[in-house]
Image (cartoon, rainbow, N blue to C red; front, side, top):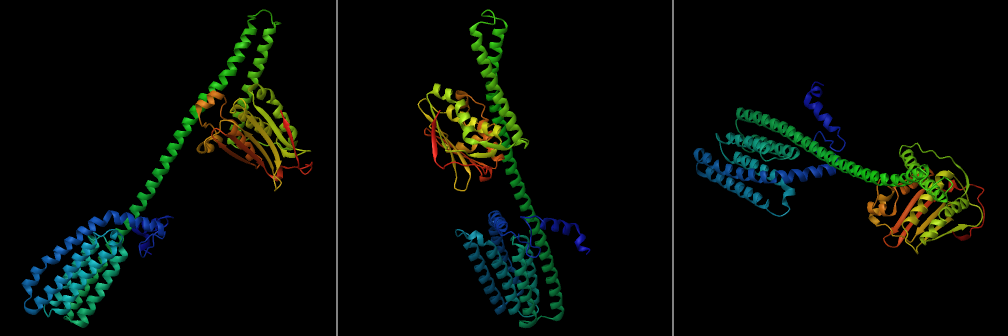
Length: 485
């Protein structure tokens, strides 16, 4: 239990709790295979050149130890040892050479393990051939192999442990059974090799652990940085959109206000004579029209604001929807005629009663039809259809032959304070609140808004109200009745 209170253990267990970077405490591999693959690719790309360099250094070390063989050995023993060194050095050179093959870097851990295994088995081979008193001295070379592989070759923990245990067991069998060394030497060598293996396993474990923790921390830090950059971009885009909205809104509010104030002052100052002058009557009409327009804009702003904050409430009632469409269509009859636009509808015969908020749905129809007329040129058409779906829902379709919208811009037109083309909005007027408000109101009725459009062809808006909105007393024939406003 004392070990579990150690700061390193607490740090380790804390890291293990990371969802994506949870480590297996025995193998030090990430439990998430995708994260482990990502780490392996990163480490291979980072460590590959360094590992190849240390393999080359190891080859020169093997060549250097030939001097020791020449000093302590002679005769056939020296010949055998030199032959062993030649085989090992040739094998190591071959392993270094294959590192330069294409796509071989993914196998670097296996190559490093082979280098360590060959180097250690070469020393054990010498221990098996050389007679007393030199056979028990070669274990020192095995210690160097353990230390070199653990600290320089950058082998992963699991590979390093596996190869270390294989070499350790092979040496004990050789020194005890194949070419026995004195008991005192065997005990001494076994002790130092055990300490070396334990030390290298321990250092390799914590080295690997901190490398992996550092990678996980860097990865999550980079991930958070990317998220922050996206949020910053989103905030900047929102700020820009709101600035554009305020610019358009100030224009939209200022225009009717100027008319209201200007015409009011003319009447107030009696510029054209007494109040009874006929010219004032047209000004009063302009004042009323501007006032209603201004009120409509303010209502849209307030309703959208309430919808955004979840405070826009729906007061449901049974509404004869064909009559509601007729009322809204009549509002735009004169405007459509002046603009040379054919405004028509196709409604079901009989009554279609929907359970909804009449004020809000009137606002939906007004905004959609107004938008369609606004962006339709002279000689074009706007067609409104009401129909029942197969699953009992109600579908309101508004189609126009206007300027249309590019496919990539469709998602933006229902976003609050976002306009696809500010110059277009200024040309045709409008605050850019219509469709965002329509979407909110339709969603409050558990409905859906579908918009499709093509540049230069026109736009089709479909409002789908669920079957639950269709009142039980709806009746009438399924046929359609065409009307032209």
